[in-house]
Image (tube, rainbow, N blue to C red; front, side):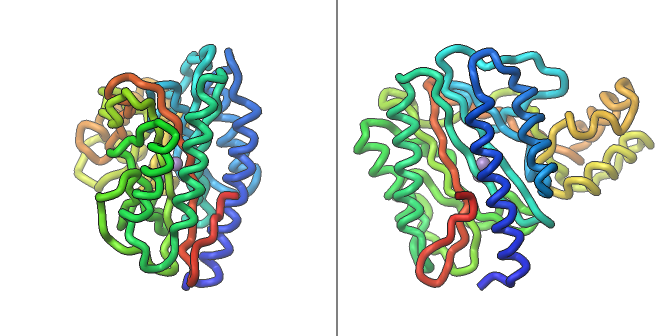
Length: 300
Ligand code: MN
Ligand code: MN
């Protein structure tokens, strides 16, 4: 069992994440600024007493994961898009991770419904002793029953204090990962659905807008050191956006110092992930705590 304090914080983070997810549905509309939506949602997390556990991700159409707008980006939501909004909240390091898909055309409705339904089915399978592959099998079966395809190389993941991805992973297909889930563990379950004729796989691009402190390595630059300290203090190992630290230094100094942290691998970027055959993607995600006889969903 989780200590009471951990449970309390996981639940509070979950509640905030749920409220922010509902707000995201209202903000995503054709022509809306992606940066504006992100900042509004991130501020909403802070206003409610949480901290973003990672930058709000807004992934459009064939972009599956890891897109968050860089500072001053001008991108807007296009017509007929399918928009995934992925939200992370933490309270004292206890994380809630949840995502939803917004369809701006009726043609996306079935795919979004499928993502939600297979997430629901997956959650019903979770109890101590269940194999990760059984959860994945439940996801895959629902997706295929509706005539869609899962993305096999994106997975759910175990969460721990100040750690977004740790321990065991939860696949979106059967036959991968036979490790068993135990009571008191926390997981983000996140099926990704794409079209039947798609590759059903994501690939990395050369763009990265979300970063993480990796390991302290020597860097001979006072401003880079200063920036490093701010990153470690504010985010520890959790992902962050350049938007959140850009005001730590004057702009020219910031760009130079940040480049040095990347080049020296003190900080690494998460490449934006797109569907390999450029197919549209839907996602749904909840965070669950494995209990004695099932699980508690923290993000509903
Ligand atoms: Mn997520
Ligand atoms: Mn996740």
